[in-house]
Amino acid sequence: HKVVFSGIQPTGIAHLGNYLGALRQWVTLQNESDPSTTLIYSLVDLHAITLRQPPAQLRQWKRESLAMLLAIGLDPKRSTIFHQSTVPAHAELMWILSCQASTGYLGRMTQWKDKTSGEKEGSEKLKLGLFSYPVLQAADVLVHGATHVPVGEDQAQHLEFAREVARGFNHVYGDGRVALVEPETIISSAKRVMSLTDPEAKMSKSHPNPKSRILLTDSAEEIRSKINTAVTDSITGVSYDPVQRPGVSNLVDILYHCTQGAGFEDQAALAKDLDGSSLRAVKRRVSDAVESQLRPIRERYQEIINNAQLLDDASTQGTQKATISANATLAKVKQAIGLT
Ligand code: TYM
Image 1 (cartoon, rainbow, N blue to C red):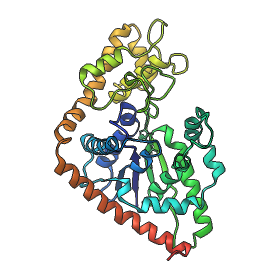
Image 2 (cartoon, helix red, strand yellow; image 1 turned 60 degrees about the vertical axis):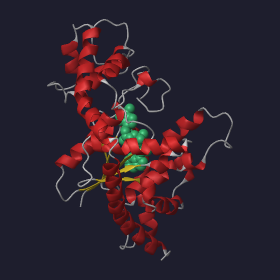
Image 3 (cartoon, helix red, strand yellow; image 1 turned 90 degrees about the horizontal axis):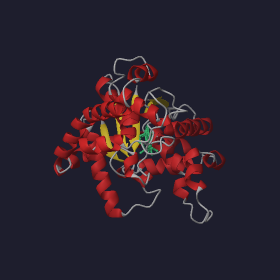
Image 4 (cartoon, rainbow, N blue to C red; image 1 turned 90 degrees about the vertical axis):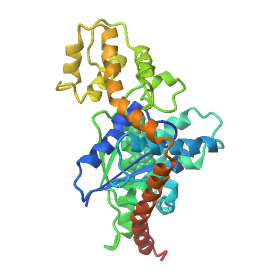
């Protein structure tokens, strides 16, 4: 039985990296999977509070993120869409797994090292939730018995950790009555969309410069303006070389992925075809391609963001379905451990 699970933090409107790297695959999996496949997508609000968020802001973001999942084409009748905190089994399994997880492994996680490398104040300022973030992520996946997890490349390490936790748990408690499923990571071909202003870093919600990312709600004008100011280089012509020419290559990547390859075998072939066009013309093509991808999403989003009934129904329905799925695993786990 195939179970697809993935999550996104409700910390603002999703950007093009989230979409090409993950969300678009969620929709494809929904639309192309066999009816027997279970699809579960979570707005991971408990992960969102590992960094401090103003409460009113978080509430608004949760709503906007839910509307966005519907706007991209997820259907709440087919896919289970829910806010993580409404299904307590996630947090409960997390505690159980954290009695299993190694602190050494957690300390080596890239995200922890990146977020803490700037901290000069020392461990007083570092929050335990940020450290144990991957344990909650493992619980998200394992509590639903996910077999496939579609994500961008930056999540691969977290899912490797989830498999390790599952193996460890099964080793200790697996006696035939319970076996946590080791999930497979599905990484999309657009696995790492880069920042427009700093193309050596990935596009992210938290970068201080809003021009570094394209939001799924950006207008045609905003898209054009952000692409126009995207950092490139002074080398003549167009070529695909992510190491030497990260900015230009990122634009080629974006064009490639927004046009389903544009009829070319790979990005290098597309770049070759673009060579000879001015950078201005290339940027125009990129803007047009992004706008064509995002226009339907933006329009649908505007239609539903103020439809409280639709949003409430979707999330209530999602919570009900996710609760059933999660509680089934949690009950077996508690039994195996001797808690029940
Ligand atoms: P989050 O909210 O940072 O990102 C959501 C998804 O978008 C992908 N992504 C990108 N892909 C390509 N290029 C980029 N620049 C880019 N930026 C983000 C991410 O890889 C992700 O797939 N910890 C997760 C949320 C999570 C989760 C889970 C995911 C919690 N529990 C269980 C899978 C399974 C996160 O913070 O994603």
